[in-house]
Every structure is written in C-alpha cells, then in structure tokens.
Length: 461
Ligand code: UDX
Ligand code: UDX
Image 1 (cartoon, protein in one colour):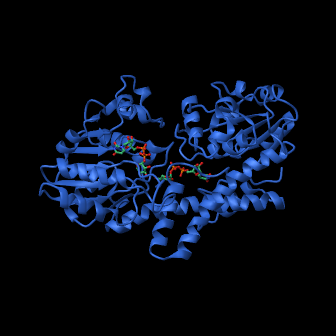
Image 2 (tube, rainbow, N blue to C red):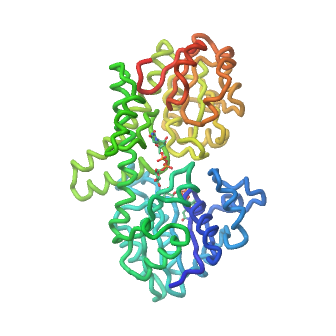
Image 3 (tube, rainbow, N blue to C red):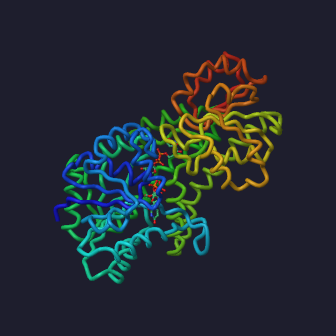
C-alpha cells in the first residue's frame, strides 16, 4: 500500500517530534497528530511556533515548515483515525500504580483504548504501528482487540520502536543509527520501510519479527541504563580509593569493545524510559519464572536509587550533618540538558530527601518553570511531611537562586552552568560555600581556586 495519509495518536515527546520529521521529509503524506489533551494540541497549534509544548533543539523550525501544509494537530481523534491508512500509537505506557504488577508492569490501558477506538472507527483496511514502548507480545493483544471488535476490515500490526533521545530528538530522527520495523506481513512492512526510505538509507532499516522488535526496544534501554548504573557503582569505589571516575571512564571507553558512550557518572539517570522499561523487563522475566534474570536487571534500578540517595546524604553529611533551615540551590531540574522534560528526574528525589531534612530548596532551571517543579514535588513520596509550599522556591535567575545559599547542587548538565560568573556566586553565598557537582561539568581546580569547597561524583576531591 502506498501511504499518503498517516494518523498518530499521542502528541507527546515521541509522537510530536517523530511526526514532524515524517511530515517534513514526506511532503506527499498528510500527517495528522491527534491527542485527547486539548491544552497540548492548542500549544502545538500556537501561531508562534516557539510556543510548541516540547522543547527540542531544531524542532520548532521543523514544525513551522510543515504545519498547515501536511502536518496537522487536532483533538478530533476519530476523524484522524478514519482518514488514515496507517495509524501510529504513541500514547504513554506508564508503570502500573495499582493491582497486579503495581510498580513494575506497564499500564496498557491507553493502548487498549486506542485499539478499541481504531476498531470501532475503521471502515477500511489499516496498518497499525506500535510506536510506544511495550511489553513483548502486546501486538498480539492489540491484534486480538482489532480483529474481534472491528467492522470486518483487515488490520496489520507493526512494531516500530522509537530510539530518539530527548534533547537530540531532531538529530536522532534525521540521522538514526537504525530504524527497526517488526511485523509478520511483508507488504505492510514495506509500506513503512518506504516512508523512512525518504531520508534513511535502506541498509539502516532493519526488519524483524514482531516479538524481536518489541523486545529490542526494552533491551536497548536496559543496556544503556545498565552502563550508567555500572559507572555510577564504580564512582562510589573511586571516591573511596582516590581514583577519578572520569579518568577510569576515559581509560575503559577507549577500548573499542566497550566504547565511550553512556559512561558518564552522574547523580543518577532519569527520564520516562529507563526505569520504566527495566521494571517492565523485570516483570516479564518474573512472569515467566525467570527469577535470576529479573534480579539481574532489577539491580540496575536499585543502584540508581542508591546513587540519588547517596548524593543527597553526602550534602547533608558535608554540611555538618544538618541542612535544616539552610538554603540549598539546585542548578537544573530537567532529567538531562536541552529538554524541559522532568519525568523521573534525579533532581526530584534529591529535593525530596533534602526537604525531609528540612532544607530550603531553591531551584533554577533554564527551561523548567515553577508550575512544573511544584507539580513534580506534589507527587513525591514526602509531600505532606516536607511543607513544599514554604520550603521550595523557584527562581528565574540563577544568581538569585544561589544568593544566600549554603550549598549549590548541580542536578542537570546544562552548558550555561559552566559559564556562570562563579566568583560572583561565591561572594553571594554563606561560607564555607559548598558545591556538589552531580554532573561533573564544572572545573574542579578553578572552583577550588575561587574558594568553594567542591565535590563531584566519583572523585575524592
Ligand atoms: C510515551 C511513553 O512514555 C513511551 O514509553 C512510548 O514509547 C511513547 O509514548 P511520550 O511521547 O514521551 O512517550 O509520552 P507523553 O509525552 O506522555 O505523550 C503521550 C500523549 O498521548 C499525551 O499527550 C496524552 O495526552 C496522549 N494520550 C494518551 C492520548 O491522546 N490518548 C490516550 O488514550 C492516552
Ligand atoms: C533514552 C534512550 O537513550 C532512547 O534511545 C530511548 O528512545 C528513550 O530513552 P532519553 O531518556 O531521552 O533516551 O535520554 P538519555 O540520553 O538516554 O539519558 C537518560 C538518562 O541517563 C538521563 O538522565 C541522563 O542524564 C543519564 N545519563 C546518560 C547519565 O547519567 N550518564 C550517561 O553517560 C548517559
């Protein structure tokens, strides 16, 4: 089938950028992105393209070029489904917060809702593409629902997991390492291959069976997260032994078998995918009775929780075992630089620990505003105990955030933090002035020359 109309359900961090790039690269295809969230759709349609709801370098230009030409954002879900030959499901699949598999399994209720809606609306044959990260064999459930509740039309299911990373979404979509398409029907697969082939060379488009494709996505995230937890585990050893984790990472990363990426020690990984996908893998393994496999992968998440807690404890310990009433400035709230996404950000947990110790937390992030910070903390474990309204202040100016603080904690690796006037910041702080660099981005030597008591992750400074 030559595809000329696509619908994507879910205008989030995955659906939005992916469809913008498809629309930009395939002017012959009409791309409609639908979402139940009216506010989000209105933001995607904002006449000022800089106000789209997701910040990603280069994205607003892409949207600006295609929007209104062959890229449309709407809340008219049924119409979108009806008119499309190919439907991408890109809704969220959060970890279950109730019932069986609580805290581990993926909550598939939105996926099921989408499948039921597609089935009830579709009047002609459609290809349904799973874009959301899903447990293995979800395609089977989706196919079942489609076939049993539909109007007798044919559905083909494909799995096409997205590997883009936030902050580099546009670049990752334009130049992917690979595109993965899983499916059982050669024609349906070819229809999707043809779309990507408009800008990705065919040797980078891998086709597999459905289950391999679904499992590959979970596996890729599990491996990446495992590397971060591995280097973070070593960072603690470095702090005890006098080794420097940056030097160790460099030394091992030059071994081409190991490679240099994802070896940056940090306060802990965050983001909507790593923890969720590993827990998902753990749950799947457990459900097949593979307890050793489950325990192995769960350790990656346990290590990450430890790293976040350890960072917060270090702050408390260094500040003479009490942060009660002390202003602690947070530079960064997003889970990584160049994104406004805060889901599972390490900053949230670190703030949570410090608030329990009665610290006054002062937050500055170049792209995250007050509303989001308060929202994140409202859902944190200790909300009721820590009086967030009173003890958290969100600043629009980093120098104001740091002024009068006892310590600064760097939680996100934003480039601009490196270029601040650190002497000016030092002069405005209580002494001794502590800096805890949770991202190892500041120059330790210079910071110490200025007078800071400086500590980073994974070295014995
Ligand atoms: C999500 C998942 O987190 C990820 O695992 C998966 O690979 C893709 O989907 P993301 O795009 O980052 O990633 O999620 P989010 O930004 O929450 O966007 C999902 C959108 O779907 C939301 O805007 C939500 O309103 C919308 N949605 C959800 C629907 O339109 N209909 C639904 O039934 C449920
Ligand atoms: C990840 C995967 O990389 C991507 O392929 C998948 O589609 C979605 O999940 P993302 O979560 O956007 O992408 O960001 P990523 O760059 O992988 O970083 C995840 C977390 O790990 C961030 O908090 C980051 O700061 C942290 N990290 C990453 C480290 O602490 N050290 C590293 O060396 C790399």
